[in-house]
Length: 120
Image (cartoon, rainbow, N blue to C red; front, side, top):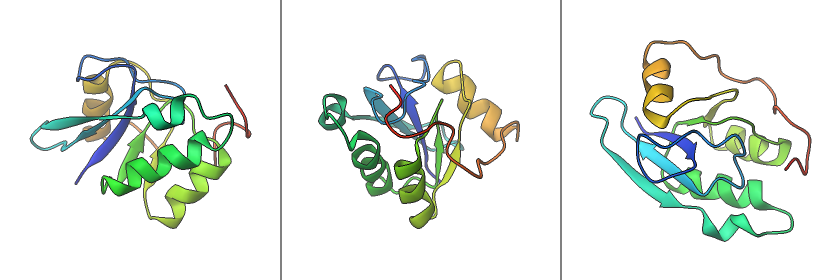
């Protein structure tokens, strides 16, 4: 299994970024081994619109099965649902802390986006 985490930095000590589409990085991590890769999200950072969908495609193309993030808008949420990626919002702390909480079953899969369109 692969988990994607929206992150403010390139490693497990980075904070989870509350803004999915405009997060600087996605940490793609195997929760069993804790091996990870930082994926740059620079293509979405300065987009006037569509950043969430572009970022969702980046995560989907990494074969992630779960996304841990602070917030996820409706267009990205729909893209994840279409790709069978579970979205978990309201995530805070470091990437490592978030993955550990996920492994302990402390998060609930979101049934709807956590913000409206064009949240920034």
